[in-house]
Length: 138
Image (cartoon, rainbow, N blue to C red; front, side, top):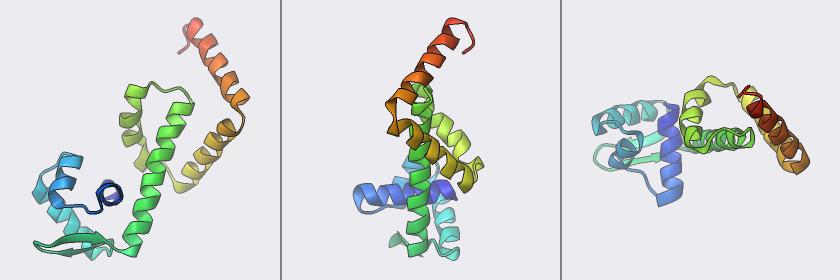
């Protein structure tokens, strides 16, 4: 469910609208699967859905969508900060984002901010990583 709300929110931000076909392509699922989930989200008061006319996010859906996109972007930034290879970041975020509490997300945000506010800290982290790689620990 979260993936759908996150993608709907992102598509609307990007294009101004989201359609079943856009969502199916984006999530790599069949349009019929999207329609079923949209109907569930409608019952859950996250979207307003009218058959053959499309759907829009409710205020609750927008609020949750914004928070989910923030979580995804924060985790991407966190993995960059700690030095995860760029080609692994998206898949790693997809693998962990639904398993973390909002408290954990907030603490990760604090850690990202900690490193961003003082680049010397980030440089020290890079030095530790380089040393560990030289010693074959990474």
